[in-house]
Image (cartoon, rainbow, N blue to C red; front, side, top):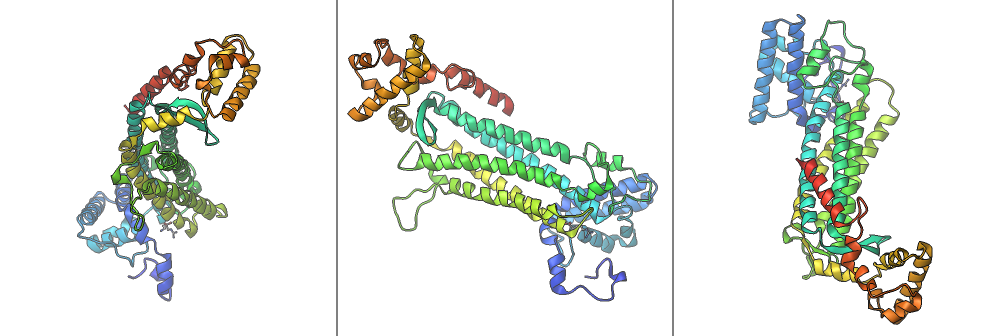
Length: 457
Ligand code: ARG
């Protein structure tokens, strides 16, 4: 295909170099946004008297024809076109002749690509938020079903205090709600239109940037033309938000993997979200969770790659910036795939309540409550804490647990112990007594469920 700029050149571009330079194999996915941007640009040119109304009508018809043909598979991307912008423009010119050559008045590919990417990311960000909401609702379902399920809560992966499994799951809802907030926040900053910045300096034509910005659904236009074409912060912000989201999914995956292990067996994943082994007939592996954990590295990597690409770039546009798209597109694809398997995996997992309860009975996780019991009877917390530590040591030596110590033995540690101690340190009461706001007690869990439900509305 003859290059748009052939006029200035004495020779054709080397084939390897041409291939190296080309981005159509990954930026063609923005064809809708590219055409949409061009339609608004043509309308603006006509409104401002820069092109005639007849030419604008022809251009629009041509562009919409290209869009329809691409959608219907009647037209395919030409790998010889350098990028999606060149492709659309050259097909348009082939179809409507010289009028097509007027479209690029008062525009550059530099502002064109900037507007396409923003439009594309805005749509994808919206889709991803919907998927995150689906995951939140799957987690919420499990949390509600398990609000009274008692399991050990951990610190340092050591059994720490008994909690409601629902409370544990609701923690992930809180993280995911923040993730949506971060994505929406980055879209807010992204939603300014760079179109009209042109190559870098603006244009001599009397354009109306507010018109194209509004037509394309932006909140306004970028105020500095150099910034308009050189800024990729919006890619980075979104990729940071995705990285944090993936970090959350990865922590969740890690727990799901741990919970599914024979060492733990708190849950069983559904057959549809696990795999077997090619050699060990007994195996049922949590591959989906492991892959999500693994793909987190890839999403971080994309962020690091683009940050590194941008760090030394002088203003304004440099071809290095073409590297933005594969990174951000890969992150989008990866995050979507992860969310699509994660939500149903969580929704269908079976919670093995008895195993959780049995685990909660071991590990002295009611020791804090035993100390609190003495505090309520007047003992200073530090004294009670030390005394219970001694009682735990005694239990370990004698192969028993706090609940099984006789009242006589307990009285040996402190005269404050009475018969009511056993009720006070039962797992059920350890959980239900945690009445502080945001704690694992039933009122707090109910409040959290209500909050998440309200968010999902
Ligand atoms: N394919 C290019 C990109 O993705 C489009 C902008 C090209 N601009 C230029 N001056 N070469 O960044």
